[in-house]
Amino acid sequence: MALPPAAVLEVRHVKKRYGHLLALDDVSFDVRAGEILGLIGPNGAGKTTLFECLAGLLHRDAGTVTTLADSRSTSAPSAYSASSLSVRQAFYVPDGISPWPSETVRWALDYVAGFFGGDASAIPAIVSSLDLAPILDSAIGTLSKGQRKRALLGLGLVTRSPLLMIDEPFDGLDLRQSRAVAALLREHAGTGRTFFLSIHQISDAARVCDRFVLLGAGRVRGEGTLAELSAHSGVSSSGVSSDLEEIFLALT
Image 1: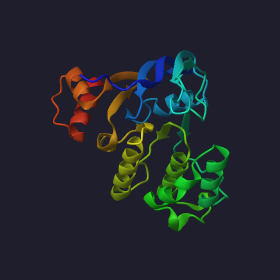
Image 2: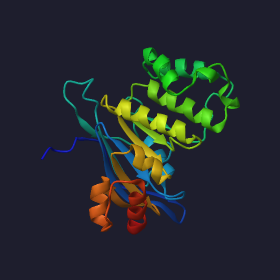
Image 3: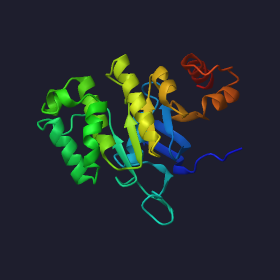
Image 4: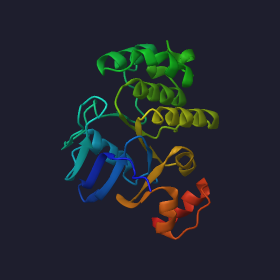
């Protein structure tokens, strides 16, 4: 049996409090190289809080985050602990923001490629895949929710960061756009890039993710493939999204 890919991110015993509210309670899991990992949970489960703790936007109260240096740019990978991830290790795409609202989408793509050491040569393909051409010269602050989401995804994809953390990548997209984005993420994962997606719509998660971390009330309720979660929960699975829904309900 082939060994699973090595972890590029190890999260161990992370806790986060807001006063008396324990938003994250002893959260532990791995993100593996080249996979699309889905963080699944309802609104209020702690998904965004977890992403912001990993990205360094929030201070975590306990726990460790261990990253593995990108082996494509070093002669020997090395593991180390950090309070947050650097852009070289990971790039975080938040949900519901309008960065540089008075600037155009074209400007933002060029800026991210330059400032973050991204791949400017990849911009035309990303623009085509996300259907950004009609809005390239529109100010980001004037975009609709779905347009802004596609622009934000483009900003993440143009970076060279080996791990992309994306909060709600399908929010605001219609069915056709969601399927196109899922195919694009799968295409990039096929090149060795790793994706960690926070998703509350289980049907979207089942469509694109290789493995899942189930988060409920700030605690990890399960981690693994659909088959592994099925065995853990005792819910039989035929590999469709409705099975993942039943597994999630059984474990949470």
